Length: 255
Image (cartoon, rainbow, N blue to C red):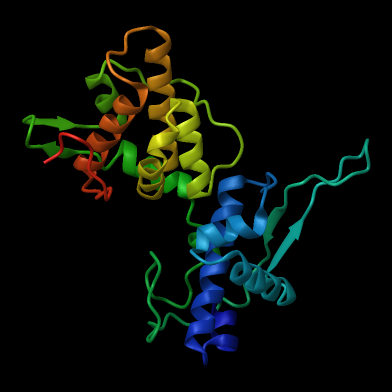
């Protein structure tokens, strides 16, 4: 990161864009763990909050600087390349060996502002952040019910659902619209696609798919007393309420 700052720091906007793409690539490398990423450039843009075109521009720049490497796996039998792309973050030891001086002029993204922050600490795994949110930080009092919700499992149990042992999730889910469409397809409710987009934009994806799987299980057992979509949204709203997440929509009956 020091290398990028020294070379591009004179143009603050350019540096921040490059940094956002670099950190997004660090997350992707950690999350996908050497597995191919489909729609690679668009996925990087989604992680970095940039357009596909902007992400592609700075990916190419980072490759040119020798900071990242992207490859496609080749099938030795068919001699053809896979559709996905694997990203590798190359070493930056020489760039991160400077003194412990505090930085000025640039906002931090989840890390302390010191020049010697190891590159490995910048690989902010989305999976780890989600696990911490769901399993550790959910000790929030629910004043309406005068109780304490300790985990997603507790929320599901309130609705007679069990947390699934294995999620019904295939492939890499990184795009909001794709997740929303998955929700609509699994619930058979395309009319609420706008609502599901807002949910996909605010709620961690592993939470969404755990709830979907649980709703699917209870629907198959014949125990559901309302539509699958209504039950799904009700549980999501409960999760969002205790986490202080504003979903940005209201359903019928909401005040």
